[in-house]
Image (cartoon, rainbow, N blue to C red; front, side):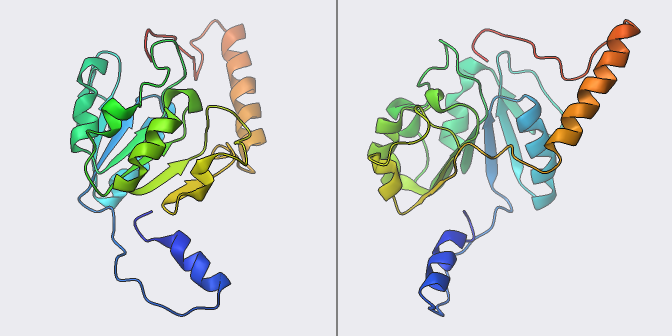
Length: 204
């Protein structure tokens, strides 16, 4: 998103050699996560190597490793107001349904970016289209309705990256899944605490 890679792919398809001096980098940027579960935690751990400041938003504002600041759900606006990139990893619940709407999007800085790899129903796509002009880049892996309709105006945006809900896909998935199940089965038999337990909380 910061290196304008999509535009270079387009130039390559046209066999066009053209420098782009609008490329940037994430160093020194503020990256904000909505939700601080495993997906956000593992992402934050890797992003730290790029010299970014990591902010997070969870139910009670509890502090977590790799996060420089954490806000409660009541303080979510701080993420939208201050971060250069907002990444949604939250699940879809009655409390998070279209929580990313024009009220939140209007708070974001011009030239900021937004990513959704959580659930499509937390983002109001109509409101995103209305405010799409203000973003450097938009990356969506999940949508309100999947597959995304060919009639959706999201396809027509120049500053968007659309992927078909496959950000989780890897050749290592089956190995990780087996190891998790196998190790948890041994722990369950031994009456030990299980790994990767999903805890349902109000809002997140």
